[in-house]
Length: 240
Image (cartoon, helix red, strand yellow):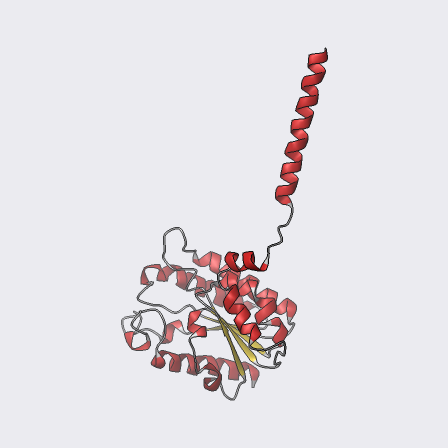
């Protein structure tokens, strides 16, 4: 009898320890600044953007957010004139990175509109890392709806994923993302799809080399002229 009671006690203790371990595994983790930077590779770059404002955020501009094609657009502000534009592109970011930084790169600026170009780094064709068109679509919807919850009535423009030679093998997935996002925007208020894809191809439907840098991925000066024309026209139709 004593041994039976002892074994029962041992079992109870083991179960209790197990519950404690599970409980702690569910407890939210608070990361230090250093750890946060390691978890998100763009943290340092985003902080540099924030530091440039010294806590004084301009209001009423069109905020552009997205990956390196936005970040490298050095003439964006002047190209978008007469619209006041702010360039918040960062790194080789994806759509989930854009979602993560809405509260820091979009909301505090109380923009008149938001323009987002992401997805090409998500659908990258890298085994084990590439994502599907449907996954990118779902995250894009999250981005749009999160912006609209924070900034009711503010239009969100999604710039289509553009075809590139470097990632041509996954163009079908990117095209699917574009199609799904376009359909969503057509059905929802204050959500707009900007089609760049059709303007960046040649007569054969392949990426037109004259619009891309030698890396076969990012737009060159001629490419950005096309971006300027298409995006500014879309903004003018809705904001003027």
